[in-house]
Length: 205
Image (cartoon, rainbow, N blue to C red; front, side):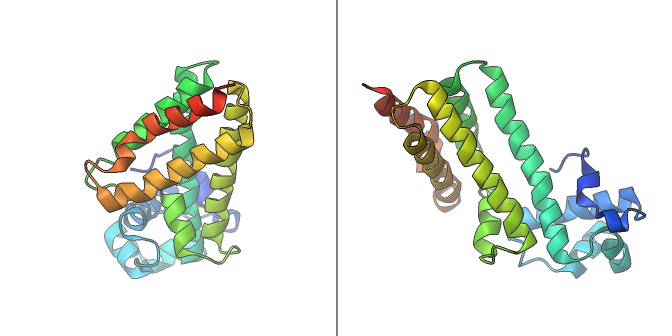
C-alpha cells in the first residue's frame, strides 16, 4: 500500500545511516498492520518479525514505536493529498466538481471489505494526548483539510463559506466512521450526493 517515494521523511535525521532498504521494509509492514489493526494493537516484535529484520535495525531507522507511528501517518498524509489533488486537477476551476470527485472516491472506498476508515481519524482516537507524535500528524492533516474545504466553499460563492466547509468536513468524517460500521450498502456510499445537496442549499440566495 505505501508508496516508495518520500521514504526519507520516515527516517530520523539522527539515524540517517540506517539502510534505506530496511527502513522501507519496516515502514511498509508497519503501515499495513497499523492501518488494518490499529497502532496500539501492534508491537515492535511483530513488525520486525514480519519485516524480516532485527529490532536494532528498526531502532536505527526509527528512534521509537511512537516515531514509527508518526512516520506511517506522514506517509499516509502524502498519499491522502495525492488523492485530493488528483480530484482537484481533474476539474480545474470547478471546486464543486472537485469536492464531488474526491467524495465519490471516498464513497467507493468505504464499500471495500478491508476498509478501515481514515488512518488519521483512527490515530486521533487512539491517541488523545495532543502532544503524541501520531496525534500531531493526524491533527495537522485534519486542520489542512478544514482549511482547504473552507477555501473551496468560498470559491463556490457560498453565503457562509466557513459553515459550508465545516459541514463538508463533518460529512467526510461521518463517512470514514460509518464506512467501518455499516460496510457494503451503508450510508457512506452516498457521501458525495449528500455533500452536493448541502452545497446546493448553501449556494441558494
